Image (cartoon, rainbow, N blue to C red):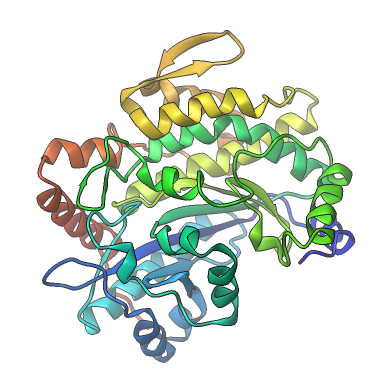
Length: 377
């Protein structure tokens, strides 16, 4: 939707603090654990399950599958919906004799062997991006939160930019790529946000008018033809009337994905509450945020981040405590108490050591935690 007047109407009529969750999974050969091109087969098989058929989606390559909760009235509602869809997806995977994985990148399957999904949308994406699309074999977690008011949604996005590196560090789960240790905690972020146009950290817009002016400029100059080409790591979603947070790597364990989604939801809502109370700080310039973004990509929770208000460093291990403290009012209102892990996925995988052994352990964790209960239909 690139009719900016219509998009504004969507936000003005949006319902506050509804929640939608999106999780992306790798489709694997059960023996080799390499990526296999079987999305279309899974999609066809899912037609027998109306709930799952409505919830799954393709995401660029045929070796990837996404599940969506749909619009939850609350965070708890969205989680319940997503847990049901998770179990249905993993039952389908078992029936179709494939495995699923939830790390930010696949450690060794060559990008040259992955096929773009054959739809008009993705054919257009491939034609516009070429190598950038081909190389982007990445998997993530996205969270949508309903925000009423167009100016308010832009203000929330402007503020949340400063939290992108923090939540990336917490979620970092992609140390391996191209058959080797990348030396990074989130190589997914490096190959996606540093390659795609209109991606990563946008400069603050201030209000809807200036945001709409920029989008209209992109349309007038034939830079974009749809709002999904605005790939920023936090963005207003024109069709849903939500703020969409999209910096995080996919999470291997279901409970980690749920906890991270809860913290993100609380951050979005707290930013909206601070805006309402007139205490939302001025947005931080992108050049500062990029310093923390690199630290999160390179070192994750093992590194040190910058507190911009104080002009000093702090250890990344303190990020969860800092965010939980700030979001206490929102979490009390929403009933969210996320239990975050002591280590992120990159730390866990490196602790195992050898790449293939580490990835095999991640696949087992994914199946153990996302498919804990059988589905009743």
